[in-house]
Length: 336
Image (spheres, rainbow, N blue to C red):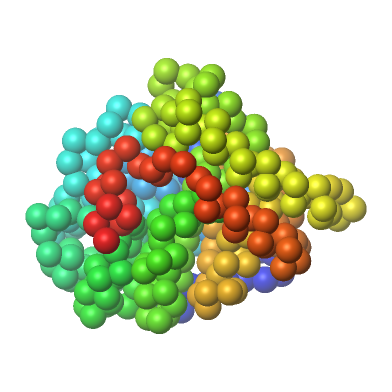
């Protein structure tokens, strides 16, 4: 593991950056399973030991892939997975379930696919509005008592939902989209997490690749789910190029280990700086298919911004156009 570790809520200690497993599914295009496994091993070798997946990534195949890593290195990994969505990211979701019976069923299926007897961090992936969140979290707490799960997490919840859940059982982390161009969680969810001692795990910290400056929204493949996100639409993507330009400008002023900083490093370091500013532990989980990107991402841990650079990034974020989700109710932003 890298020299530093980070403690999220409820005493859960993880690496300072995590790895988002969804990138190793066909959601952005086809994946080579052998290369995917090599990437996972490299992540752990490099000190990125907090591995995030979900039962619906690849229809369960992502958990099965990670099982191959765990078979050799379970003791080196902090494992997170999720339940609640029915369907797949590429084909679409057909339901959200948070009822107690489904919670118990889902965890057993995940444990079987992962080939392990316990999950370090188990998230409710999305909110089932038909079921009181207290009921869902009570069922999740039962999994802790049964030894199947060590810590509980919630994804894309509102501040109010987080408070309700925390009244039932300690919550180790909230996972929601958060990046330079997705800052809505800073209004309510982040301050509440800080108040309650809950860590934050930003997914899509690189703006689904857009903030790296390597994504041309006009050339996305027909099966690339980013085509359904409003801010990737043609007009919005052109307008949002301004935030990429700002990230590039700041990167050009910084260096990591004697080399020019990259936009990805700046985007990740900005999130770490926001965590320090807002008073809570923040562990982004960028995903990648390439081992060298893991090394690049880790360079973000060494970046320090000037006040002027932070002002540049903040100003760019204020000009972002388009929602981060095709359905606002799908994320916390639409329910606040």
